[in-house]
Length: 321
Image (cartoon, rainbow, N blue to C red; front, side, top):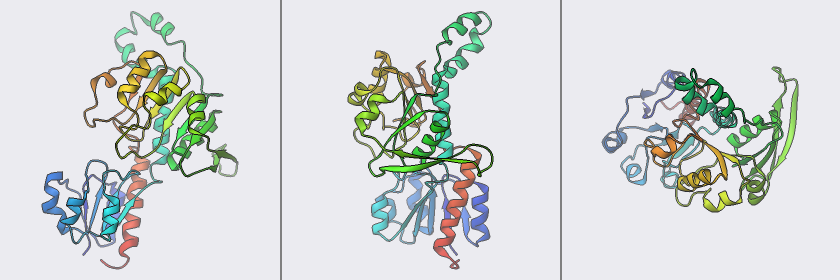
């Protein structure tokens, strides 16, 4: 019987599909330090971002046939080494794209109208200082006509672009591989009314210089941040940046310096360098909108991830139970 360890959770639908296929599915969390003693019994491990599957652990697991990542990034898995050992590595790149893109825009909307700060101050000051608060929050901006820079034009980046186009924004994506793509927008509830827009990627410096908003959707394996002091210096004054990709993609010291100088008007952060304990000066800054790494944490995305993982595992083993 195929034995599967779901170590960071899975939607009940995905678990049910695997059990109906005749597999043993264990969902009790195994601590990272205990995995070397437990994982050798299993054919499959499914993780999210919490569990790491590195070379040392892989070498201890001769029965391991599949490593699954419920999500997009694979930075917590030694992918090349696993594949060298004949182990299939699976992720779910399409399942959570819309959820992550919508969260990026939640931050964009919040920062454009100071919703994040109003929600902090209204409970304590809304009664006695209502008029003062109204005046201080009356300098919001609309998104129509603004330029959205998208760093990384894969599935999530394209979903982000789709929302921006629907809002009337100009979209300027950058990508190392993709030169252009067609973005489809459903204008009404019916799929019968659909607008297609062809978007070409632009040069890095052009995007930095012209964007009013910049949203990051790229993997990050450590090292030098993609956005640091040099990149902030090239941006338009008053830019808003959003990171729902990976902690470390934006240099946090450089970000705080850019905010204090006025170069950056605000930042939306769903990911941090020191998760799960982000630095306090980010969490408490009045020009930073924060969420606790919830890009893919919607009911729909989790169901999609569960279904996609189950389908890929079942397809791999076929009738071999």
